[in-house]
Length: 192
Image (cartoon, rainbow, N blue to C red; front, side):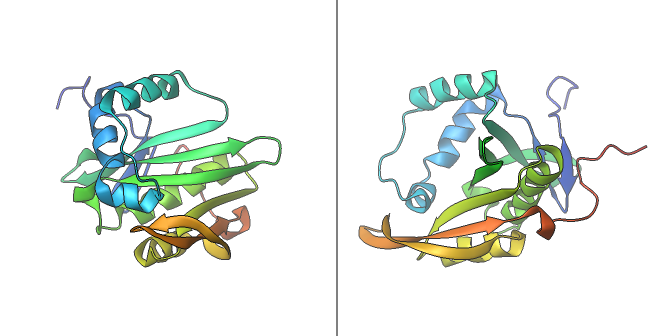
């Protein structure tokens, strides 16, 4: 892999890493977000066109003060492979953020999402100084709920009837994480 193609990795742990968004991955981001299992997990029923996603990525690449977005990488054989997206949608007035994660279909079930979630929370609390990060996950999505709990989120309530799962109404489970749950050295801290 040439130096130009080598991705920037901001932090890594346990076989996964986070780096910046990349324009050359627009088609992959689109593929991951429009995988039928991801669409089901989001609770939205309409796919997005590649053109629409590319337009949205252009905005995200310019940066926005209320967003922190990362490419998730799987680290195998010393070579990082793009494997997902992690996002913090920040409300600066109250120092909180909504967390969103999408993992590539071929990377699911390997623990990459859990590590990426922990790294994103590390960034949120140790770099951005947020006071709370929250997410919503559809109630029937037990695998997602377990993975988020393993990464450090706690279930705090249910928005009854707020979601759709396979054509049926369901609740959305609200989960949150606090900085007091993530003490210790940041993976983003520079060494030396």
